[in-house]
Amino acid sequence: MADSKATSATGGGRYTDFFNGLFARAVHLLAKRNGAGRDAYIMAYVELLPLAKCHTGRGTYIECGGRELAVFRLVEPERIFVIDNTCPHANGNLSGGDVEGDIVSCPWHFWEFNLNTGVCVHSDRARVRRYRAELRDGHVWADLDAPIPAPWKDPCAPCDT
Ligand code: FES
Image (cartoon, rainbow, N blue to C red; front, side):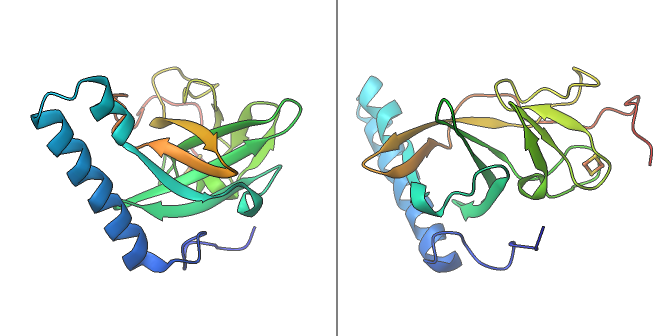
């Protein structure tokens, strides 16, 4: 897997991603402050990239709102998953891992994570943060403010290679 960390998958560049994320966050906070309720939640979604730019069978790396993300496009049935790109074991690049079924395998030491839950297959104490994602008009959107617990490193995990 080539290192795709150098540029954003949207082709918009880091500054565009940064300002898109910043704008979405500002709108979300303003709506929340004004008591917009569910609308505030909806406004937290940000556009990540066109579906056509998503790889199948492996992840697509993207930076957005100061986050490093891995977008996974699974087919039959078509599903989209967005998780943090950084493996909780030793910061491996999860977007570069192989995908089999709903499981992504970190390319560094092969910890496997269930994309439905973010939980490591080998130890449920290790997990990656995931975000609600959906398709809108052929583009992937994700709620980067989803209240899902942050990942943490499991010192007793089975992989020590
Ligand atoms: S860095 Fe991912 S398994 Fe080690």
